[in-house]
Image (cartoon, rainbow, N blue to C red):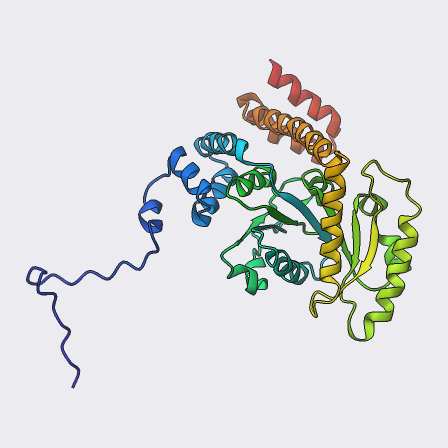
Length: 357
């Protein structure tokens, strides 16, 4: 026979006992109301990953009130930012970026560092949805208290790079993360945008040279501070060595840069943790070299100016499309372009003229 449930002696007759509050800390109550600027700043300064995640959600929001609060949060965090080493990691889909980051991240943690991983996921052009599965692919790192993983949908922004990634970097730095990985989707123009916000740019490639080498855009190879041929294990070791030599030869064709650094091509196996420590040693050497020759600071300043210009372009675009006259004529002119009645340049000029009327 089933035993009757015990009644709470302190509860009034006929009233059920309330379930236990299984929330962690102040997480649940805070979700019931909007956080203030002070709430965000206190949580970020204390390294609260929940508050940090909510602050990033705020800066990714398109709501006007959220954008204003996000701007205040970012500006308030600015004095505490800038003290991290930012590493961009790119490569074609299937090269093993997530596995590489999982293994390399553990190497970073062994040195007592705090690691933030910003993974830019591809968004569907049809549904605008995004997989956001990097946490499930990084089982060890996602469970570590000194690691913060934030997958962000790329949406419709240029080249698949999340529009607010740079601001997210600043928040992570203010939260105490001294090493930041930024993983790109590895397609389109995303590499260019990521290169403009990181200190070190790592290009991951698969074993195999020849046609694959020809298919890699020169601009991406030129941006790389190090090329790593991943999956150099099993029967692919010799193929990986051959590819490494081909990439080394390709790097010698480029003129020397202003960094005081000569890019290298190396092999590794993230799955078997082979060559990862050696790659991290090279990355650390690059950091030390660019700090000593002052390129590190110079590059940061140039990047800040670049994103100032980009922000103006973005704000002007938003202001333009919020114009009532632009909204009223945009669809009609667009349809005329589709029907071949107007050129795209002529229609754009008409729309611009109407916004000035």
